[in-house]
Image (tube, rainbow, N blue to C red; front, side):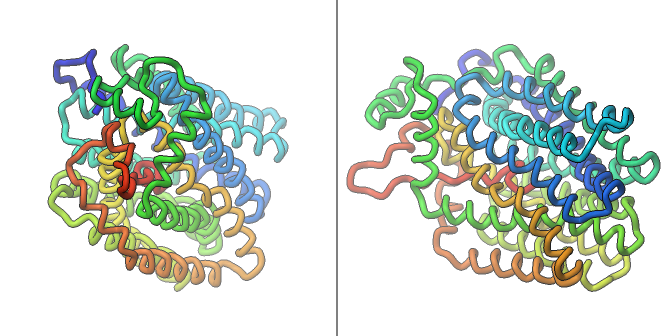
Length: 459
């Protein structure tokens, strides 16, 4: 595996810096996830237009993220992270400013949201790619580092909805959008100034033994610049080398599509029609987030001793269909919060497990492009989630849409769990991807490479 040569002494600063930047970014995103749909609903009254705004953000997110993997590997994730966050801060700040000046027609709003989505994609990718290097510098086991990353995500996902729901209820959605802009700016400063200078440079060349293997396989040895499309092709070839990769991508793609429709349209429409208001959206996120933190902490501590496949599908069983069905039943708020809390606990185990599997299987010099492509494929349905949910609510109403979404969630996760590819999840526990593993031996099946269903593979 490629080693970090410019920081031989143990240092926690890179890991703390990366996790802090992730926390700030995710908190702002969760605030925006409440403020933006509520702003559109309040100004247009249309669930369909709310779904269109979600599409305008997530379609560029997925597309740009898929195409920027080689650039992250070439330029280095640190530079990509702070520059994209800075552009996002400007675009996000223009939304409340232009609205206050009466210069924000719906088309301009869509354009601003699209810019934010296009910048968020590579920004989120760059932060995630820096996790294994930060773990190396801190001399922290990879499974623990991804567990801490999961805890950070869950904490931010707890604080964000609570702050967003309260802020929107007290001061209106524009205050939430302004706070989102501020968090982008703060995240950019953390990455630019808090991380060490040598952190997140362009991918390190592999050691001599790995360079020989890379030369045989045609992989990037780091000896001379490699073209963009060749780098892109290497990442794609690695991703499609194993049936487990395809199974993970399809499963997470389906659940992400359903989750996107639920969070961006169905939950806000339920909050409005039930009379609970935006504060209820924040409460559901907080209830699920608190227990998800507990689940992530447990995963960070003992996930290396748990059967990954069993825990993975048990988590999906808790976090998936029950959320749809409890809203469809018209249950009182305390019951809704209980269901979200139980689901959050199960969901807290998912990303730490999948993040560890990713970093075990993917060679470090391919991590940016493999992570980008895999994440983008897994997130491909997210832009359509809000559109489909908005259209469904307009055609058949909220309750039938919730029931259908819950049924689809249950069927997709349980049927996927019957496939034999999932046994690969535990096969290479504790090993880190190297360049040799990118090239299958002659006459054998290719080594499996897992698509990145890690933070933020499940949004």
